[in-house]
Image (tube, rainbow, N blue to C red; front, side, top):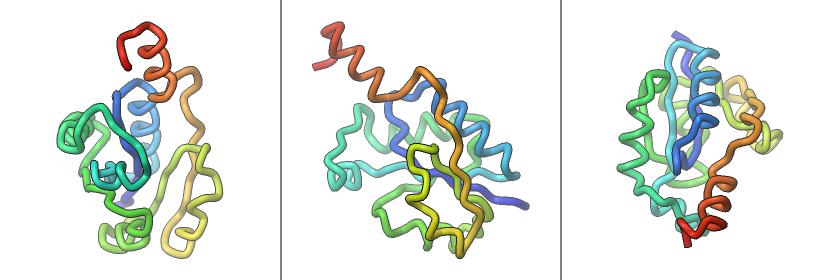
Length: 133
């Protein structure tokens, strides 16, 4: 069995998220998704609209996802790869080169982001429309 892992906040879930999860799953037989915990987001000075548990519930409902785990630190990736017997690590290409250190443990793949959609873009549009502060 070929196992794949990817990481993200997965806040304000959109078709770009679904697209990258689908493409990640196509690289193997089993997809593990590590979602940034609320505590980790605070360390990154990032605020998610939905709590970790809410985001986990949504991501678990996606048919391409086999398992969801929390991401609590930047440093846990090597341990996650080892512990979950990961063959392929996947991230969006905006992170290109940042996780090449994992090549000692598994294949590293950077997938192109879906054009025209991002959580940052959605939040900016909602603020512009006065829906989000």
